[in-house]
Amino acid sequence: MPSRSAGIIAYRSRPAGLEVLLVHPGGPFWRNKDLGAWSIPKGEFADEGDAEATARREFFEELGVELTVPLVALGRVKQRGGKIVTAFAAEFDVDVGSIRSNMFDIEWPPRSGKRQSFPEVDRAEWFSLDEAREKINEGQRPLLGRLSQNMTAALTAAK
Image (cartoon, one colour):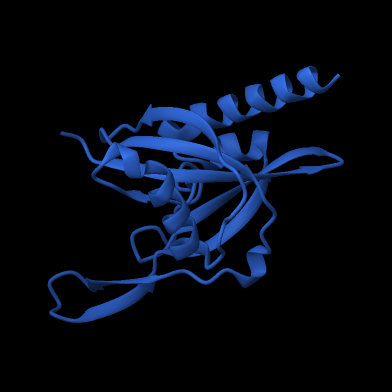
């Protein structure tokens, strides 16, 4: 069975248009990677009923910010490696300069016997939808389209 993750796309409205929050993975493997390396804050879960709780927990662990606003389901996508990501959206502004990520330990350099700690997320940034489409993991790209469709539908319904 493929691994499953749940995550949240935080978004905000700006005069220039919609912006989404993406995170860049920490650690030495991702240090020099940019395009296609960014992601929504997310983490693995075992029970489908725990998707929303997992998404909220991972948002807190990766950003240090508790998300208490309502979530909108965006469905699932399958990444190239087979991981299935269940995503939600939330209108929520985050000061990216003050994020605090949890840490993880790995042997680094490989086969050195030395363990080092790295942040799970080394930075977060707000991107326009066009910029985000270039930065985000290819398997998560359809989530940006779904968010855009939901926003368009909500604006149409409000008229």
